[in-house]
Image 1 (spheres, rainbow, N blue to C red):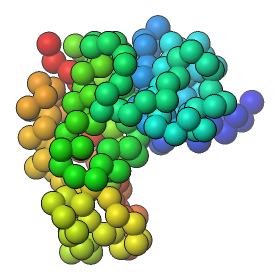
Image 2: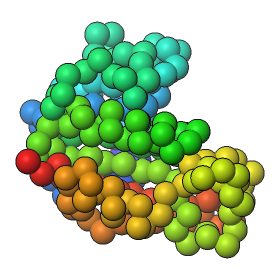
Image 3: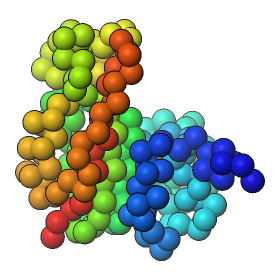
Length: 191
């Protein structure tokens, strides 16, 4: 089996969390905005208890039935403190405005168990501040022509504290030349 077959098109920064031993077998994983499950290939095959939600019912059609739901992140039906690990990869930046972003984030945080790990990748303004055009609030036009809700270092640090979490890794941002910036935010839920 080659790496592609073993891990699928997993986000390299999520793979880093696996390598660091932060996502252990026996942990319950919830992928919010899971799409077709690109980050779940390895986890599903290795017998992790994996769940997911996506607002597009077609995206989850090929995933194992029962554990995957067609729902919005803001009002997921999973109970409080449900998952040991919550994955939010390239999802929160689709928020249309501040209230929706916060609702999506709080919905994600609500289902995470105390001591659990939030792995989040999202678009940011970090490193491309002079290349973006503000549309409204944090909604911006990126150099690649897409519109996204953009976070920055201060907001993520403030949110970490407000949520009652702590950074497990420093914020890491990848700037894709003249296109966009993606930040990795890895938080442990205290409590």
